[in-house]
Length: 545
Ligand code: F6P
Image 1 (cartoon, rainbow, N blue to C red):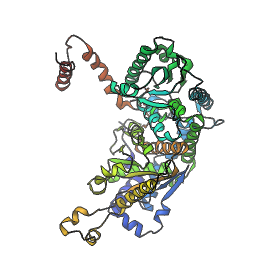
Image 2 (cartoon, rainbow, N blue to C red; image 1 turned 30 degrees about the vertical axis):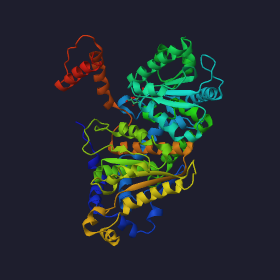
Image 3 (tube, rainbow, N blue to C red; image 1 turned 90 degrees about the vertical axis):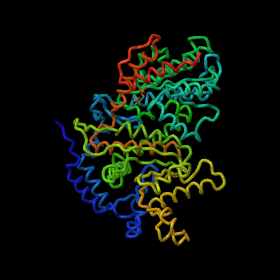
């Protein structure tokens, strides 16, 4: 029987001993003992500056974490990723999101065939289509220009596109409307389309498999919505495009394969925002900006591939997550973007991180005997400060935080940006250094209130700072997290590229649907709770009378 081996590695054992020595060391002491720490424990790449000096690490911690990565074979695993090896072993697939942003001329092989020319051929088709939509050269069935684009997809076929659209709104065609429908809850479709004119609306049905229940339900509803107004099957060809690996199902749905943009099984859903799944992004920001985004991804890829571990941003971030998850027992990591345009970034990261590393079986099939993927969550600052930051500062849980901020705003209105940035810096400072009882008393606080107003500090954070949120910076930022997730997966010895954990729910829902839809009372053979819930739903779903 396979046995998880991580805890038996020399570097792991050394980290356990080291943790016992440093767990009580306060960031105040680390900074006091090393005045240059704030300028030393930083790394920079692809326009991103990472300050990890406010993390609870010493030089020895970093040395041991890097040694752990070495013992886990990180170097070889990075090479395997970029070589196109079938590192998604449980699905026997290569994992080549890095090929999606490889420049022309790079050669990356899958099963003996260079995939880079295919990537660029699809990008060129997407660019042609996007330009025609943006310029008005592509018209709807009645000859009107397309003013609304509705992306229909879920998971990686939704979260990347909606996150990127929101992030890059400042670069988007402002005379167009972009909407995203993902949930099988009809409210999502109804609200997204209620004020749109079908004659001016293009649906992009984004689904790698073209079998996903939610997306297919929404796509069929979109089709009916379109036909109810345009009353001609021929309209579908002007109002629907598809992104998929599955030409057969796209054709069967009735979408002209001339309007289909290909992706490949070596692109994972949550790693697909710069494949054709990004078609809506490209229509929004234009092909040139989309290519800038790809260049940002690629710059981070190159950094990840070539930089030494101690200066490698994704390696450092991945190892820090391991340090907190497995040694401090932290269960979550907060991602706190101080930019309103990144409001969907935490949601995007939730799929990227948790669908990737929310695993408990090693590649060899053993049950892990250590913690893996932490819960990622967050909200844009400063809103979170007036909500959950109380717990970050004074709660009993240790929540490492990633702050993401930009030196220049797209909206330099009055004092806003300085106020925003003052809050970023203040929060990281408060978390790290806190406020002692003596300092609280010195403010004149009555004794009884002193314990309530003490901030222990020693709450770790990183700050990722860039000049401005541009397409290239967004690409670099997403690639940073993609690769950090890979580093974690390598250490935890799990496969970050499958998602078997989503299957059971899908399967059971498939069994329940007919039980809900049948006119006759079905014979239910679930557990007593599920049976009772189904009966109650069937009894209550129609309004009385
Ligand atoms: O929920 C599982 C999942 O397979 C995700 O990994 C994926 O991003 C999503 O469903 C959508 O899949 P598809 O693009 O095939 O519709």
